[in-house]
Image (cartoon, rainbow, N blue to C red; front, side, top):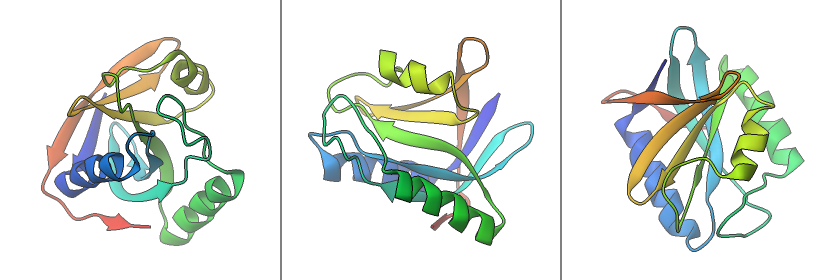
Length: 137
């Protein structure tokens, strides 16, 4: 499994993490998934918990992300969030949510970016960073 992510998206995830520090930053990943996850757009989300160890996205933002993705002919293929004081490994709460989603989860922490997917167990997904077009949604 591989996640293809534009260089600009990687940069913006880290910028967003810095903006929301000391709390977790979070957002949506848009694109298409076939043999790989191909990220072509992102959207920042609000962490209503304003916590350095947890995040929660409001239901209205989740709904709007799906509606806007549909308008663009894209899918919501994942979420990203930061770990301000921890390495980019899924926390217990992350694992709870991963078990109930078909998303790729990208975590930024300690100046690293890692991707994960749940398929009966947690799997790390290789990230392939490319110079390619992307957009904000």
